[in-house]
Image (cartoon, rainbow, N blue to C red; front, side, top):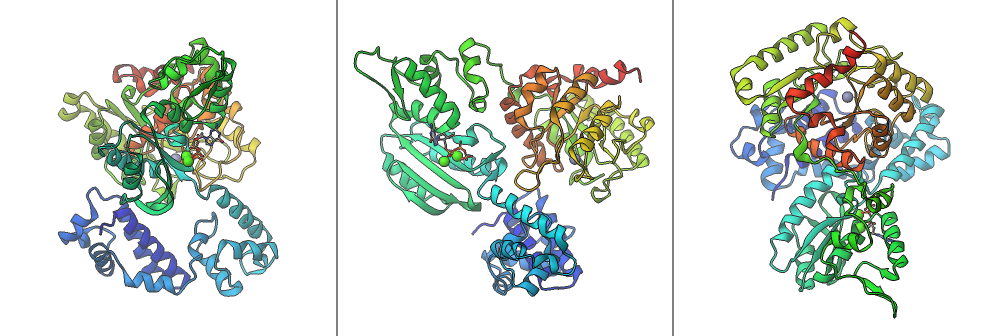
Length: 585
Ligand code: DGT
Ligand code: CA
Ligand code: CA
Ligand code: ZN
């Protein structure tokens, strides 16, 4: 039995929710949420910590919870939790996933209206009963209906990091199987979409049945939905659905193109084939009599070539002009992970990060980066322990000292001192210009006032962008994928303002954000706006989210030249200074 720290953390969160529903005392509840949070940032397996009896010495984990976590990790079960859960209807957990609905309101709905599922909630809202509860009202009721609608839209989709972990394990285990020939991920995951419906895996084999059997019995599989010799669908741990297709070796390139998609891209390819008199499906080309035969196809590249096209990277296969570019030989030379030389926008323990400056710096060095920008929150983000000018100045001198240290000098590594400065209500910044001027660069982001209308929000952001000290616009729309909608903002107007002022726009690489969205990058690039791929890391591990940012940059047709963090240390500093110089500050 193995429980990851994330699973354990999730159970502790659930316990906190249930205790809140029961109306238990807030200190007890907080103990569980704090413990869950503490587990998030472990740097070693929880089993090791439990076995070595070190759980109690972790800050935020008290005696009672130590006992419960130990029981859970060693036996795989926690009767306390099971009992607690048993006293509530099953559907109640789903209510916690609705935006704007916390335990207090769920308790009121449950106790007074008997609501124990999303369906129940929808009914009492439509009947107008929810509005009548104390502390609810018409406005809340309308918001709840909207939250239900959003929740349904998101149901059954997953953020890319969740799928990536599963894909890595499944693919590597399948690859090691002797009956597996070629293997690849497919579908939206291979195209690095911002969210994934299901994971598609494609294998070539002469022994399809053996491969399918191995797959459906894999330890990650929780439930088999369909199984056959060449086609299986399963539900994996965490609820992600996964489709496996097994084809013959000669069919592999055709199947790979087909199952990578997108559907729209496939349709274009099929009509191109038809223009040549060939019909293209997921297995092969076939020809009508009297038509010239297509060439033999051994891989995807040859398949594209046979249709008169350059190879199209999976990320571009979204029917956004890639076919025309592949025909004309004008596809971009897409950015790659190995092009990244550094990054900006990371947090440390000074605000809401979990690791110190030096830990973040060393983790960046371990990733082979030459520089790392620190951008802790500013004071208005009080819930994230934002820094005031005094603490910021302290951090800046700490950074300068580290930069002068032997370790950094020898490694040729550098920290840049920055801030993730809140954009306030009218577009003012959370620090005065004199303070911003002491920094190497500034990321400006919106963290409050999300309910402003589109015009107000757009003007607010543009005002911030016009400040000569604002180097990078952070997570442009504030969206949290599958959890919180973007605030309304006129993106072309922002891109225009960024182009005019020389402001860089961020691809926030956190799998929760992936913002600015890939669909807007071709426009930004055309206007000459540069991109910074930023992990928004709150832990050393979070730096690895950069990989998702690279996927989004590729989807946005960006090359190494479009992304400032592909510049080596010797050149990037000048780029960070360009805007201030241009505006003479
Ligand atoms: P997802 O899973 O919703 O995130 O998106 P995909 O793109 O992975 O879609 P999925 O899993 O339904 O199908 C995988 C690929 O199979 C899809 O990208 C293209 C291909 N495909 C599926 N259905 C059709 C279809 O009706 N026509 C064509 N031409 N291709 C299809
Ligand atoms: Ca899929
Ligand atoms: Ca699928
Ligand atoms: Zn932020």
